[in-house]
Length: 137
Image 1: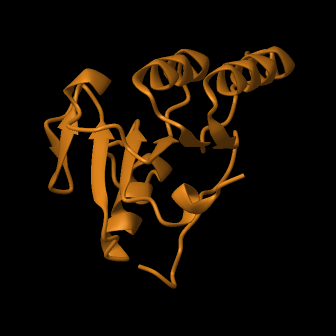
Image 2 (image 1 turned 90 degrees about the vertical axis):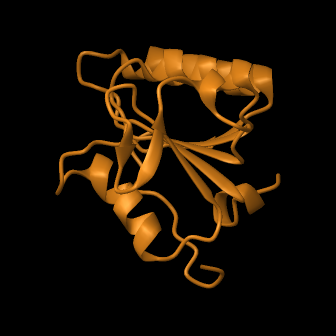
């Protein structure tokens, strides 16, 4: 199993970045910028043109490339988002969102696992804090 894209991705897509400061969905982008991440950062938020100076895209099809790593920080439609990422060609992702209490955790977990296995996606999560490589960044 190749874990290199989790520790040294050349491009990262963050899905669900918020403009609201002091939220986890904002802090993840802020942290990447503050550690001087050397790769390309893309964010997907159809309600913003940019956040912290990073251009925001409204759909996957608008991205200039398939990112090495996708990071999901939004709590809505996680299974649908993962299916879309799989169709787009993403092979590595972290699910930092938690599954909502109204969600059938077991069923959603199986669906995520099935999608990722079907499309050859390696993933971490859900409900994880993330990974920061301080050595190379």
